[in-house]
Structures are given as C-alpha cells and as structure tokens.
Image (cartoon, rainbow, N blue to C red):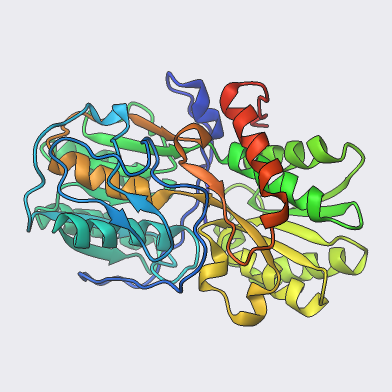
Length: 394
C-alpha cells in the first residue's frame, strides 16, 4: 500500500480523509479472474449506495467471494448516467508494484475488475508495473488498446496520468487515492476517508487490548498516513483515554522502500510485543505482513490489524489466528463503479469520496474476533456518520 504525498483538498473537506496505497508487480496484459479464500464479509457493501439497489441502465450486480456487494446506486459524482453497459466493451487496470497477490490494495482493485468482468460482461486488460518506469508505458499501452475507462491504482501514477489523459480526451480515467492538481476533465479521483475506518479499528484495538498498550506502524512519514494514525489514535482514546500508543514510520516521504520492508515492520512489532503491546495496526502496504508475522511469533494474545483489504481472507491459517480485524477501503467498489459508470455514459471527471456514510470504508469481521464488540463499533460508526463524532485527519 502506498499513499499520496500530500493532501489536495479540492472543494470537498471530506477529502481530508483520503488515503493512498499502492503496490504492483509484473508487466503483462491479461484478462484474468482472481480468487479469494472464503470468509466473513467486511462492513456492509456498496460504496455510495443502498445495498442491493440497482441503477437504471446497469447490467448486473453481485457479491464477490470476499463478501463485497456490487451494483448499487452509483455515487452522484459519476453524473447519474442512464445508458447500458455494452457487453464485450473493454476497460483497463494499471496496477502498481506488487500487483495481484499483494493481499491489500491492488488485490482490492482486482476484485472490482473481476466483478465487472463477470457481472457486466466487460473485458479487462491488466498491466502490472515491475518498477516505477513501467507506469507510463503501461498507461500508454492501455490507452492504445482502446480501453475505456482506464484505472490507475495509486497516486504514483499522477504525473504520467495527467499527460496521458490530456493526450486522450475521449478516454475516461480513474486514479485511486489521489486528486491531481488541475486534473483533466476526463479523470475520476477515487478517494477514501481512511481516518474514519481507522477510528473503528482503533476502537477495536483498545476494546480488545488487555495491556492498555497498542501500536501503529506507518509506511512513509507523510500527511495522508498521518490520517490513518490520527483516526486510529482517536478511536483508541475514545475507548481508553489513558491507553499507551506506540508509533513509528518506516521511511521518510519519497522512500518507496517503506511499502516493501516487512523485515523492518517485523523488527519494530517484535520489540513492541515484547515490551507489552498486544495490538498493532500497520498502514504500510506489503510491509504490514511483517507485523502479522511478528504477532504469530509472539504467540497467543498478540494481534495485528490489517489494512485496505480484509487480510484475513488471504492469510495463512497461522496468521489468521492473529488478525484481529482489517481497516477496509472498498477500492473494489470504486473500481467496479467507475467501469460501470463509464460504460453507462459518464463523460465528465470528478472527485468521488468513499466514506463510512456510503460504506466506502469499514472494518472486517472475518474470524469472529470482534463479534463481541461489534455493537460498540457500529455505535461509533453511527456517531461518525451523524456528525456526533468528528474524526481528526491529522
């Protein structure tokens, strides 16, 4: 998972909650379907919609193997298109380093692409970046393929996307976790109130902690990862104002190794578990796997909290015993909705914000470890949606 290097407010204050994450890998064009191990779904369903509702002109909805519901009412940012998705039309996905199989961010986008393939009859062309140098040629190739829309999975595509979108004004693009400055009219910015979801897993950490000592590991030390930390801290302190919260970042702004250093995260987490912490949340992409491994090694009563996707669903049986919950960003729904909206005729870019209010973020219940506190977590969720609780972004 990688995160946007700065916050661009645009006209929406809620964009303060967006957070970035991207990981990608091998560069080849495919039309594939990913599978996910079965498990309990995350918090309800379709971002920007009433669960199970349908939109005029939509082809199909459905539920993924991970439990996410697709096919509800499109968020208003897409302009309420009313056409019908043409079966066999083409969409493109440009994954960042890590690609399918990263267990978090890219995998979530892949689930949305798979849902569009099976539910809408759309052909999906995929390219995965082995290195940052692949981003521009991958976007160029997808644009040349005639794919529409093309979704760039992560803020690191921003510079290249702005140039390529300007050169292809009839193609619609989406970019996850970024609001490009002076964005072209044919770009949808797909952003998430990650601080709100992080509040809920912070509350879960405090409710489950027996030591009153928890931790947070961030990737790059940048404003948008601070949003994750701010929400987590606020949620934990809402439960226990005296709770001890450790915090450490794996790299400075621009240090992309921060997202792919599970050994560093494991070393930090091991030290904290040894000193008494019993729950650690990582917002650090692939590095977070090190926190999970540290929890396994630390033994019973030690928990890790996943991020972006429901990491329980792709974990080993040994790891599953130590994943308390995950803060889920429905990149899958944002991806599916962008493909569906453009297929139905959306032609004007906009900022689309996915929050607790539209189930764009949430927490996972797989494993049943938070079943006993679910009512309390849902109470906090209701208070955030109503405005009774205002979650800090910094």
